[in-house]
Amino acid sequence: MKRMYMNGQIVEGTITGIQPYGAFVSIDENTTGLIHISEISDDFVRDIRQFVSQGERIIAKIIDVSEGPHQLRLSLKALNYSSRKDRQSKDHKRPLVPSDTIGFETLADMMPQWLSEKENPMIRVDLKHALLEEDVLSYQDEVSRIHDMIHSRSGKGNDYLGWLDWAERYDIEEFARIKECAKRIQDQAEVLLVCGIGGSYLGSRAAIEMIQGPFPKNDLEIIYVGNTFSSTSVVRILDYIKDKEVACNVISKSGTTTETALAFRMIRQFMEEKYGDEASKRIYATTDKERGLLKPQADAKGYESFVIPDDIGGRFSVITPVGLLPMAAAGLDIDKFMAGVKKATFELNNSDLSSNPAYVYAVVRRMLEKQGKSVEMFVSYESHLVFLAEWWKQLFGESEGKDGKGLLPASVNFSTDLHSMGQFVQDGNKVLFETVVLVDKPIADMVVPTEADDLDQMNYLAGKSLHWINEKAFEGTLEAHEVTGGVPNVLIHIDEANEENLGYAMYFFFKALAMSVYMLDVNPFDQPGVEVYKKNMFKLLGK
Image (tube, helix red, strand yellow):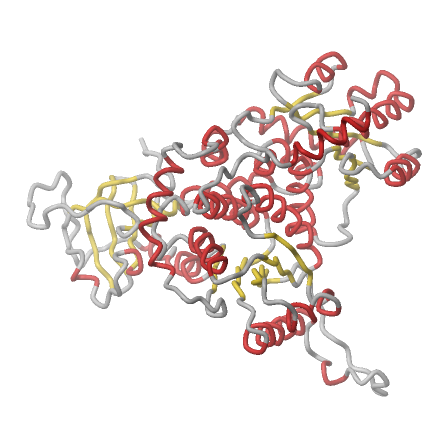
């Protein structure tokens, strides 16, 4: 019977073959592994035989499991403790494979894929343009201490660290029900109203727009409501949907969020007038398991409902039913999304600044703050990343803006905003640094055509792709802002806009946030400041 293995698991095996690019390992009678030369040591490895030898017993960490036959990608350097056993030991429990009989053809076939993943990780942080005055690695001791605090759940706000391992423990039955419900929404509606504010809608909107791009070819239109008091917005939406088939996903843990509760009251009345008793089959509630005002409504009306976990705050909730139901209804593959979250959960679960890009980004934020920066500007060069920036602003703004501390999160979309904010970035007060999020492969592209008369004098770009032109705009702007303007630029590369990469990227920002905010010695998971305006508003409203 084959054993099951998973990313992050610690395994023991025997070195059965050595090649210039890595060492083959026998784990059990059905499972083989490979340790690539880059995963042998943090030091530069010229000769792999200086670190492992034929027949040696080793302990390694699994960093990838192939989808086909049992083949594992392993790492020695990922372990936080000594993993080497006495290489002189002759007491092997399994017969050794002779050095000239490796016999791992299928494993060797995986090498191109694994090497590609090593060279092109899902997230890459580039600091060459960050204008740093310190060495990132000098923060290793502090990062190791906070990493241990996060994973031992002993820091401030630790009751809200449920996102940390959510990908390993989410309710599989509820997940399947989300997918069934999404198909039902697609069958019954032309428009899905997502009624929520803040983390209750920003994550799903960021995901849907990033993956599908502008003007998606979907039969189901997603409209976001309940995120403003604007009377014009509510009235116009109700007028727009009056002759359309409609479903609604109302999202609120407490059911008392004023913007959402008001909008939902009007939507509910509209749908009950339009559909009668059938309205309850078109309304889906994502809320607390048993508390709050929305859960009793859902039970009384017979709405299908999904649970917002108690240990995951709103701005982290995109990986829960809060984000997953709208994403699935829009046609996103939420299995792949959660696979990306899970992969990040394992790969970013180490304190090593030489291998954890999330912690590198976290440290760089604090380093640039120490250098006098007070504003972090999220920069994108694609219009479909605008709401990823909005999601990021809430994530970081609500988490670290406390006790008079924190960076102000702002955002721009270039090249559009180069014609407005570009002047300030170039020549204005040097209070900011730029975090540029780049998607290296576009969703779609086209080539500039040639025109015989060239009246617009654009033939110098004929034959060039629009994405190539966008890249040149980025490169020119980077040089202008960094070299001429003296503005630090932190570059975060995402390979392409797909569900797995997005899940990985969102968890990357979660992990970076936790580390970066704990470095300020504040609670990353509460938001006491927002209660001040609510208290004043409710007084004026007569509550």
